[in-house]
Amino acid sequence: NKKKKKKTQEGEAVTAKEQVSATADKDVSTVQLGKQTEAKSSQARTFGNGLVIEELAMGKPDGKRASPGKQVSVRYIGKLQKNGKIFDSNVGRAPFKFRLGVGQVIKGWDVGVNGMRIGDKRRLTIPPAMGYGSQGAGGKIPPNSWLVFDVELVDVR
Image (cartoon, rainbow, N blue to C red; front, top):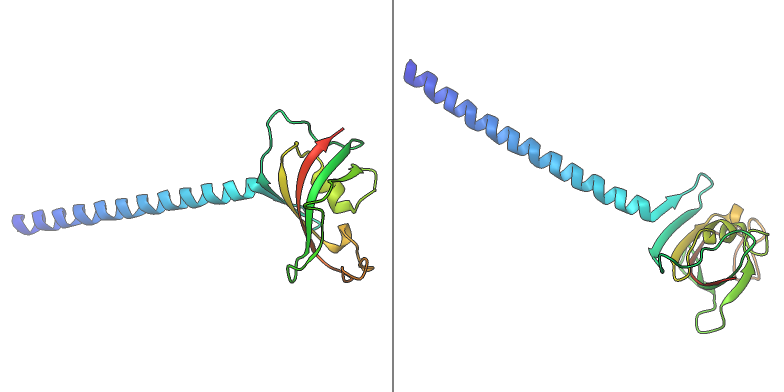
């Protein structure tokens, strides 16, 4: 009987260790997954209205920041979200200049460019309500289109 008890206790000890290591592994992987999702979520912010702002590249930490009322210069590529078709781009041309926050551009840009530093690159996924709405624009943007802009801040004055 003593031998049997000893064997079953040893067997239980082994399985207990295996369970501990298995749960420890699970904890580690969930922690790693949590960190990965946190890292991604810090890169992308989604607003209640559907606007998504993703940080693609960071400029100089001491670079000037775009803020409402400032004249900003940007390079951009605009695509339709549903098919990825480029409808506008100023890459290879002069940067596009506008005054931030005063309605010179679509609402998605006023919100999405705000806070960028010179050299920052962002991807803005803009819902129709913050883009061209039910009107569309210039024959290239159909009504109620979701838009994706890759924007780089070049200058702030």
